[in-house]
Amino acid sequence: MNAQFSDFLFPDALMRGLASEDYATPTPVQSQVIPLAMDGLDLLVSAATGSGKTAAFLLPMMQRFIDVPAHDSGTRALILVPTRELARQIHIHFMRLGSYTRLTSGVITGGDSKAHQIATLRKNPEILVATPGRLLELLQSGQAKLGDLEFLVLDEADRMLDMGFTDDVLAILAHCNPQRQSLLFSATLHHRGLKSITDRLLRDPQTVIVNPVREQHPHITHQLLLSDGPEHKQQQLHWLLEHETFDKALVFTNTRDGAVALGNFLMGREQRVAVLHGELDQRERNRVMGLLHSGRVSILIATDLAARGLDVPGVQRVFNFDLPRSGDDYLHRTGRTGRAGEPGVAISLVGPPEWNRMESITRYLNLSFESRVIEGLKAKFKGPSKRKGAGKPSPAARKLNAATGKKETPKVKERLRDRKNIGKRRQPTGAQGVDAGHAPLGKRRTDAPKAGI
Image 1: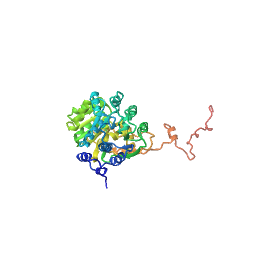
Image 2: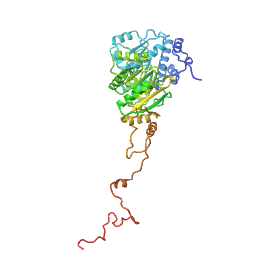
Image 3: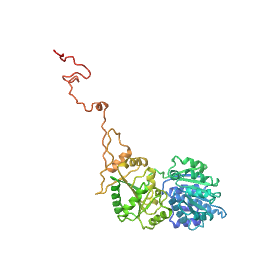
Image 4: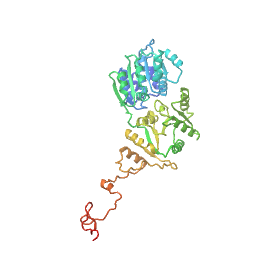
């Protein structure tokens, strides 16, 4: 029998919040993490995006703060995240789950007014959600204090390291109450820089691995569409947006300029789109996300900053206009759909320069792709041509070839002596293998007439 949230014996105020959000059966990460966190253990958790990990760390800390009030205390829990969008998503999640409690939460991120954030800190919210850079500024100026901290969570720690926050995180740890309980969540536990943080953060941690990042999401269908170049991709994407059925869709590009150009192209074709990238200030980001949440736009074009932390209900399609740079980035992008058990489709548009990267992603994630072809917009590109002397195709290449319908050309073994004789005329040989009327190669003929005779 599956566990229920009632099995955790949460306070009534939390159970009412769970019921209002239709929470009944915990996800696997919630079932494993919540009891261990409630026992006060430090945890090292690997869970795929969309697995429900936010509630897995929010609920135990909220339960503790309700059961053991500390009215004269400073901030009791800190949740460190890599992006402003993720900070706001967690804050919204907390507000919904804690709607029947008196617990308070504050958000500290770059791009917002420092004066407003200092006012928030003076209210001593029980839970603080912050990005490292701005929080460290406030700690160093004495405006923020973490001496009463009981609970510290690092969410998407691998992303924080990739964004260069290692030194900031370590500096923040030096300001925290050393007697705290700590939880670290990461999509992968194999990140090369993770140990530098875990050694300072965790004490005798218990490791929990749920839905490893390289495990295929069971509710997402992965499709592949070959393209001839950027302009061809624009036409194909426009067709897909016109003919696919979805409430909301995310389109990912690798660069800010690419996102802006694609947004202008689609707006010129009367698509309801908005663009999100790292150069937007906080007010503009909030405006863009408000348009998407409200349904005033149905398509968000984003760079990878949106691949982490966005939790937008109703995303049924993810389009990779530009193929992501790694398999992990592919999973984080496509993980924006197929959430909470709902089906989703991820469609990647792949041009000739991206084929090798696609093969690497396929091999790394052990993915299987369905091939898509749009009549009237078929690509001339059919996959890489067979290179002379190449070995057998890799399993990933065979999968991609099968998806695109490309036939494998059997390799013909080439001998070294054949390569040496290229361009030489082959002569017929006699019974002894000697050219009729010619001496064997390397021997001088002795029956030739002498000069002058």
